[in-house]
Amino acid sequence: MFFRKKQKVDLDAKFKEVYREVNKITADAGNELDVTIKYSQLKLACRKYDELIDLIHQGANFEEKHFLSLKESVEEETKRVEGLLDED
Image (cartoon, rainbow, N blue to C red; front, side):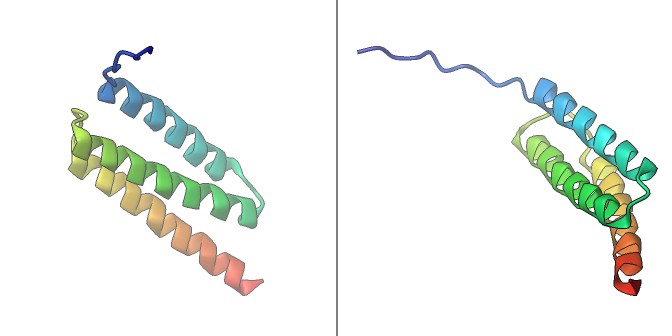
């Protein structure tokens, strides 16, 4: 039988990878003219921030308070855009 060695996950590297993703998503949302697409991108960014916060809880060496604040900003923008969707 073959056994795989357990590989240690570099939480900081994973965190940076997800953070790059969330930055791209929020930048794309900022440039998006279609309100429905913008709303979807912002919702995705919120889920990515949850992923970042989860990585911090697992041991990634980043300041949780800062990323909670960033997530809150994206959530506020999401609510604003949702209001625009409701107007249609």
